[in-house]
Image 1 (cartoon, one colour):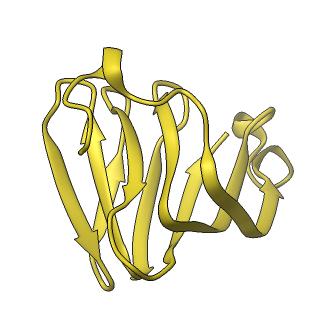
Image 2: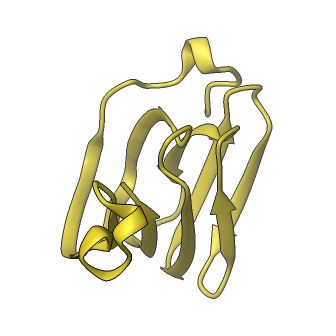
Length: 114
């Protein structure tokens, strides 16, 4: 069962691995972006694993799902299940957590500004 609201969501990570990370210093490319980086990561969540509740207030991101099933539950309890080929954007109002609800590893690529 997936907890319905932020108060019930896990705060820790379980079965979660960052497989690859590439980072570029945006200040070196665009002087007005000093102190910011563009980061690209490949993430894996094992079956039954999760990424705990977190927000994107200062960390906008875009995501491409590559494999498996990832159910993303928002702080208000609403949720959406993503599969290979799906995409989503995460912005200032995004507070959520991820759970692999499938039987295979969930793999996705995320690009964010940090």
